[in-house]
Image (cartoon, rainbow, N blue to C red):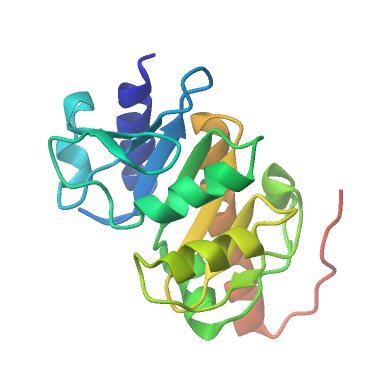
Length: 196
């Protein structure tokens, strides 16, 4: 599959799964050969995305091709790729349950077996910074040290992976685990976090 088409599929799958709505969230894939970053544009409904709408950046964030303005969070994607040689795809969403914990500044423990899809770790929270800023990008890079997902304080969630499918699967199961943790909290139930 063409890289641009992969990015479109990531965004549209996230919408099908209820993890994003309309124009929210951003998704990218890094080409393993050129190092170029293919990222969703700003202001386009994800269901209307076409491969030719995807922005292309170099490893330093310089725009090489962009019929539309690249995602406001492009710098976050660029900095993650610069620091993580093992990462070739990134998802950022504002999914309901994960974002609820992000707003509260609460880590999410691994409460279900599905958490194995992202390492069965307690999901850390990156310090707050304004969206689209270098400070936010740096905070997320720091939070992702040793992890493949993190919450963004008062903002949302980021997952990274070795390919597009890996990153989106992690996004799906982070939200699933967040929902289960939320419900356990409502029930006042005791639980034992799972481990690998």
